[in-house]
Length: 604
Image (cartoon, rainbow, N blue to C red; front, side, top):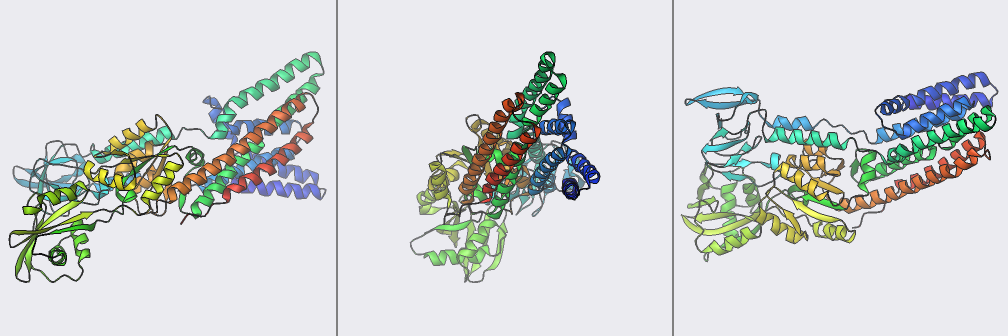
């Protein structure tokens, strides 16, 4: 609201001046000047004491110089325009970042531990290494551990983003936050309740965000050498001129030099261009969180992509059916669907959807970690993993389906293999086109996934991605981003909690879809409101165009300063002429910056 009040005071001062009320007008100009300057001058001074020189400092110095020369109106205009431009940018890109700590809500408040065979409830934060937790079906794992007894399926989608549950047995590691979907498990804690994989993710993200937060804006990078250079020049003009001529003349000329070097056009045009571009991007589903992010976005030369939920639909479907000689595909799917309708397993939903008109099943029982069985039309049907059910003559074909990245379940009829069903999280249809477009734009693509290498390679072949890195933990993904960024600016796109560290450490982190995890959205710099990956090349095109416009405005602003400095130095132009040139330049760069609001239509 302060910049608004600054503008109200400034325009009220203009009205008073035009009506002949000069004293009230001067008072209003001073009010507008002080209000506008209050939004950037204190920050500029604080940065100065820390050894940081920014564009806000130059604007402050220019305003002071204008006031000393008696041009309060011009100083008020400068302060108002700069404050409103900064406020517009902050308003356009004010994004709440409160979701990261919500990640820790995946850990239950309490856990059941076994002490000498007795069950005791303790606070999850008090868990220590070596304690044995009892995890019932439907409960979350309170901290990282290793299964000591029991078999079950673990839903790790909230942690890894992988849609297909993992079968676990004694000796298998399980992460904090995973959901036990079937049988009861006894899990020995391998990490303390306050120091597990989830807390590590939070720490990685916060550290990366703190490091990234110090990256300077383009205008500030330019101002860093410009500020001391201009101050030294003005001081030399005043000192040397006073030694050989009229001190009053040369001190005044030094102040005019300060105003001539004021980056008014630069200060106003860059934020305005960013606001225009960011607003336009939001109209086609791309939310950009800050001006610095937008300025970096156009320079990205490599993109790392998560697999599940980003390249794939995150919805497992039946993609292959193998049958024994006397069984049809329809029969096999009907049997499996009839049984799996009684299970909450995500693969069960895929098979049930493949045969919606399946007959009713009776006496259905589920054996944790093995499978599910029941009776359909008087026949005993068992559905389970190839790890627990014999595959019979289908062994080679089952292996081939697994090599294609499918999860395979075996169906037995009266204890005899009747067939196999392959389920896979399918690639989004637009992915191959997007990868080709990025390659044409000379943007490299790398797949990063926590899934197994076989599945990752199979999907990468379909997508046209050559660089595939699989079976990665969250910290491994972050390390891969650091390695990739050593050769070119890198963006990371993902939607899961396990992507959060990589999103945070990347030059640009992109959260995929409004339904992505809070941790992913908070860690990212850019969020896509939809799941169509064609947004990616479109967003890059838009950012590159905006970056070109920003560069044009910067070049024009610097050219104006370079032209005005010698003219002011030798007295060719006085302050009024200098201010007029600046105002004309501001209009030009503002009009140019508004071009960033135009967007190209999406390619259908």
